[in-house]
Image (cartoon, rainbow, N blue to C red):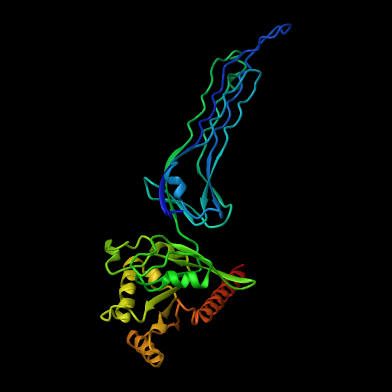
Length: 348
């Protein structure tokens, strides 16, 4: 299914039912009186996260969602039924914005998490409500109020522990297909990946993490070149970034160091927070280098970059050293989770 990460929908809550004017007309009862009942409240619209969904594509075809209207009151002081609520299912990771103001009103990050986005109208009042000692036969009623209507922008950010960065053809799709069960399109031309791919990496029987492959970034992406940087936002929820670089590019004039710096510049333009996220350097396609030159070539790249973080030399195509990489990632994620738990316990 085509990945869609942003869509605008309209949600309409149900109107409240009207109260009615009614009077008792019963045989053998000498004095009648008002008995008009209240209307029912209008239904509200909710958005609920569903782990079974991974795209907003369905919203491209249905853009309007409406809850039920409250029923009108009836005689004999009978209250109208409440309008049925409308629950709209969205993927986990959906952020909800009011289209007119840009205000974010929700961020659904857990399965079955729910948020009310528009409130149903309040019920109207029947004439029985207006009976008093000085007005024993009121004809006054109150209509139900209108339900809220909103235009909402839904934006989906994929939930992944690890994000892959790199120029087109750096080998990101190959890596994710090697270490996980994901099957992204792999080919030797730019922009093979047009939409984010998620893969679950199973380290052992009880340990796994989610890795995200986003479309390749090129120089000038911040200004709209190539596919732009519209997908970099999906990396904002990740704990760790893997920066893949092709150490043996087909074009002899292509410098791996310059390739890395291009991505770093685009990260800086997009988000200083993302730029500072922990990032590991993954030197890919070392199998294409002569064995006697692999160590020297990789060391030269690290030295020229003055890279201080972790460095891995792998071949995504052959699987060389990918197991060691995934084990290190799992250990890092476990360590971070432990520290977060400790910090939370200290705060409590």
